[in-house]
Amino acid sequence: MIKNKMKLMIGVLSLGIVFSACSNKNNKANPSSASTLSTSSKESKKSNEENKNSTVSKKDQGKVVDGSINSEILKQNWKYKVYLPNGYDEKSHEKYPVLYMLHGFGENSSSILEKSNTKDVLDKIMKDKENKMIVVFVDGFTSFFINSDYDKNMESAIKDELIKEIDENYKTDANKNSRAIGGISVGGYGAASISLKNPDLFTKALLISPTLWYKLDKDSLIRRNYLAFSDGIQNWSDDVYKEKFPTNFINAESKDINFYIRSAEGDTKIKINDIEKFNKKLEEAEVNTEFKKDGKEFDHDYDYWNKITEESYLWVLDQFEK
Image 1 (tube, rainbow, N blue to C red):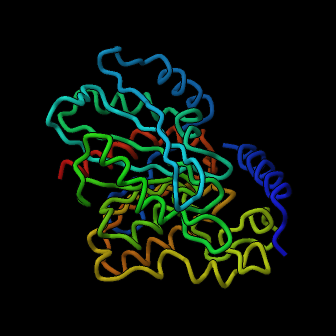
Image 2 (cartoon, rainbow, N blue to C red; image 1 turned 90 degrees about the vertical axis):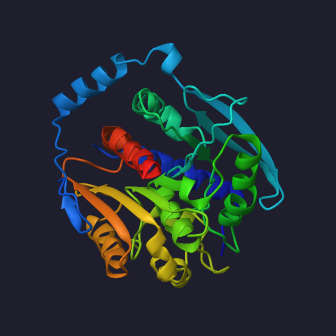
Image 3 (tube, rainbow, N blue to C red; image 1 turned 180 degrees about the vertical axis):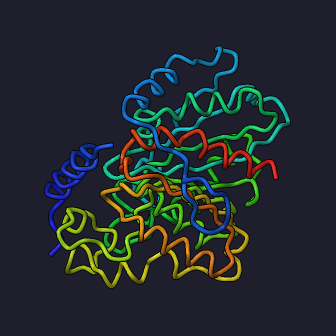
């Protein structure tokens, strides 16, 4: 039976503790590639310190603003955050492409900005770029960013409410070629699912350590504490999960989407074999995909993600320039 909300909240907190406790090759092509990312822990500390100290001047910094929607679909107030690049001017005629970023387990719309070097990286990569982009950080609660009979209809809320909200209130270039979706961990799952189901809305997808399990471990806490794939009897139904798996939605229109997938062999939450299998399905369908596989010294955590933030966001920005 589905557990009551108090158990669910306790479970989500447990998951946050479990995921935050994780410890911490680059052939460019459609097939999987080996990344050159292999920083020792000592080098890693040094690298993080250098990043911290290499600040962008105030005039070149973007800003983050808060927003919310009284969502009819979610039946609640729904928060989001928006990164606006330096030079953004509400009075100008310039239009910007948009990246929608989805967070990981037990997180919210603030988490990526608070836990990662994303703001500094976005300031840095757009400092001297003629083309810039807006980034929207979405709150997905515990939804896996899908529509669920027993949780939230998050995919519909993003499609039918959030995109409209952003296009109406910010200077966006509102067409599919100027819209990307990305995510970390479960957000990567959501980005894969939403893009493949909605190629009319998104033509770029950034998947960072996406939780694309082909079968979730029997003892996973997620089975007990997330309702997105419930069948009304079990909290987690393998049949429902299989039915909703993103590769089921690959079709001829999927060729319009460009994917960038990044994960590590040392990831203890999602086996690299599952990511490779997902990537292979895209390749077999002749979907454009760039897959980078990092080493065994990296895990499913922000220590790893902070090292690949710049490359990941640069990939999206470069896609908008094509």
